[in-house]
Image 1 (tube, rainbow, N blue to C red):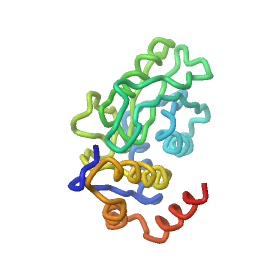
Image 2: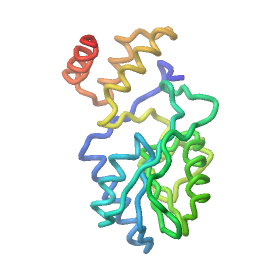
Image 3: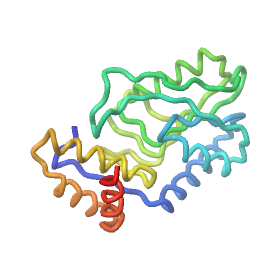
Image 4: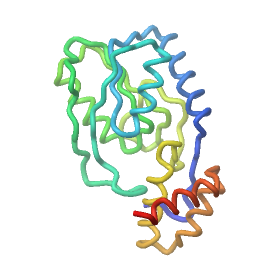
Amino acid sequence: MLTSNSGFEVPSWNQVYEILLELAEQIQAEGFKPDMIVGISRGGLLPARVLSDLLEVARITSVGVEFYVGIYETNSEPCLTQQIPLSILDQKVLLVDDVVDTGKSALLIKEYLSRQGVREMRFLTLYYKPWSGIRPDFYSKETSEWIVFPWEVKETLVKLEKNSEKSNESLERAISRLTGSGVSKELVDRLLKSRSKH
């Protein structure tokens, strides 16, 4: 669970694009040419789309897995929630996620794709946690921080709100740590306001 000593890393849209460009260059330098890119839903969807552009790979799809229920809170095991809708038999696949934490979700998906007959597979994440049970073939940075991507700020706020109900840290203090890490106060206020309308 996220504690008051845990930090956030908040990459901007431009930083995410730069990271993906660097990773695409690494893939090209290695000579790996995927036939298809598979994004792990939900965190890997946007990075997979950007990589399909950067690597000029038109075939892109997704596979779903659920594991996290809160910040640093997981179910006991990940669960496959969306199977791959395309044949990947004898394909070279680039599997993409935003971050690998425990590695359990990635291992589940890699095993699933292998059973579908993938010829060759590489795994890419933007961030890699040092305690992960799997090391990506391609990643930008190893970090212990909680990553807040631009596409999940509201989701993070909802999780912080739920966390504050269970912990000693107030929501205001948690939000202060988040804004201190780079999320604008105006955006947080706007997202909280839109949340209160539901």
